[in-house]
Image 1 (tube, rainbow, N blue to C red):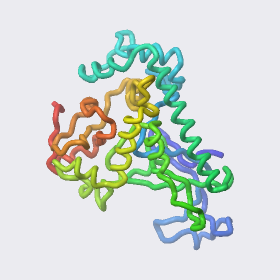
Image 2 (image 1 turned 120 degrees about the vertical axis):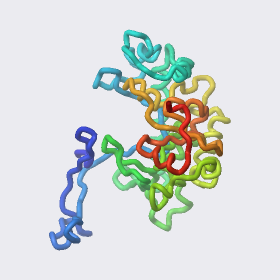
Image 3 (image 1 turned 45 degrees about the horizontal axis):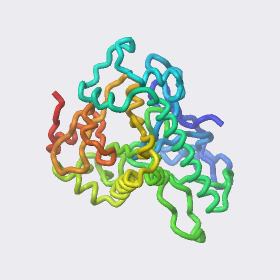
Image 4 (image 1 turned 90 degrees about the vertical axis):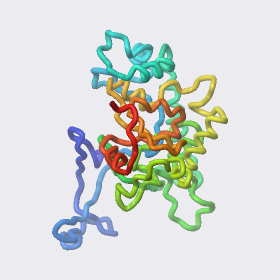
Length: 319
């Protein structure tokens, strides 16, 4: 079955048909067209969904100057991640401090390490979904997902962006629905947090401008949100318990977004606010590592930085 949503030159496209009624048959045009600019739409196909708020290690990714994806434990990735700053890989104008930060993590075995943790994350998610099917007495034909969207519904690849859990509408099912898969992956140490504004619960308001919290209130705002506070605590607990990516015997060396920008030989693009502090500083994108713990970073896409500046936030290290 084809994907419903897909990208053409980074523009999201979709294919569908006339909306169907409760009997499963296409509605009449009178029934499916509400007015002059609203039409009933039926999606017939499949799609992909990218979890909000978390980032798990990559299993495969494209190498520089290549459209082909390779396993992170391949010889090509191993060679590249041993030292991606060697001259024969070409110029790469990363900030010197960021290069020094990355050099502490790269070296022989980096690609193998990343693929190992990527496999673990995949198997953990499979186990979560299987456990939910077993708990509900369902199978792949009857099991469903419940999606909760934030500000952005799609990413640039045509994947949904959401918090996802098992669908559990029946009142007779014993016990409450568990935490989302996003949170369960954090709880097990299978993922690192990747909070990107405004796709995160406490910053969802009626307008974007209202969602911009005041300078000097980042820590207070993050702690006041039950969802965000819980997610951050899951990460702290996983680190304290040395689980998953925090296993001291073989901890994750590079964060997944680091592998992605290194693979593309791009510069980090999202500015960062420290959720552990109540200051007024927005760090430039290449200084994210100055906030050592991933659960304390709130990434701000470039298009939204002016909103924070208007609110009174101060840009540090941008010039």
